[in-house]
Image 1 (cartoon, rainbow, N blue to C red):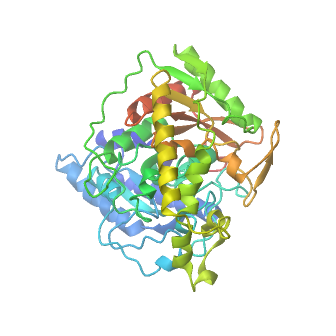
Image 2 (tube, one colour):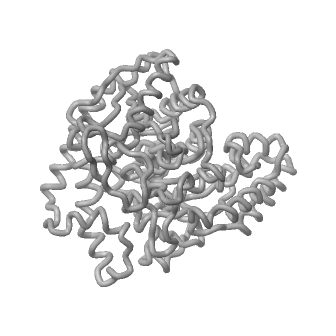
Length: 466
């Protein structure tokens, strides 16, 4: 059962020569063969390349060399990151002729740390959906229940990690695309500060204006593994316009006050989402932290401003890309932009106004976060749902797709780091996560809090049958 070890345990056992890279690779490839037909998480499986890489690392270890902190650990990456010589499809037939000239920055960092790439994982078309399905690979299913979605757009990555096909890997997050799949699949995911993990070599390109929202980040089964991955892939790359040479810093928790909200303003959530936040708040209180109800002022329209920048602004460009090839486009690539089909193209004035609103919101929130440098929220208003479901009953009222995702998008809009960890199971056996949001460049503080929360929570189960 080597594939069920944590990423940190795998790394430690390889360093201690208790297990070989080849053994770990074979254990994961066997698991992929066994379970991927059920979940359909992989776009490409790089079996022979992984075996060759394992042999190289074994030889390096035999010579007394140190291949890095992830030496021999099998990982995966979302199929939006370039891997030299391979296509980066992003679930779109429009990308079928693509071949990457070099590794994405974060992929190169993983490899330099000794990690072994097992494959690339599935996405919705052009990453434009909270479900993972496309015309090339097809639909990815949630390991906890194949009738349910793993979320998106890093749904293939989350499903592979949750199903023990990978120890961890890379996702990207422009509106919750790391955190929602982590929440739905019972794993951990970090959305860093923009540029903290350079997104060079990611498609779509994470530059202005999309780079205000979208980031690259790690995913794993627990917060301790997530922290190790983050320390490996974080860095500075001048090719990323949001990257800055900021040291990782320290994870000081002294005097930290935590503001807690069970929902986003007056938008109700499913009972399990609120119950998980209450449980995590009680755990933080038991650890000695000051935990108080708090919701920042003035963020009510943050999801709408995010939607303008993420969907409405690029909609004309995306429709132009699809022009004449509409029959080849999957519904996942159209759902978020079709709602703006009848609207005129945004004007320069509207763009500037929305950016100005965003900046004012960010300044106001950061001022309030002097008192509450960490916020505890639900990741979303709902838990994992059946494929294509778009309406949910809550104790307050029925909510739709946009309302259900409101707890996710403010962190993207405002450039704040946020981490999701699994917290509990519903009576139906579905995982429920909680979300910690912090100030820019304070990822290690969030990760340390997440590690401590998981210690109070105890071991989290994996999906039945995996």
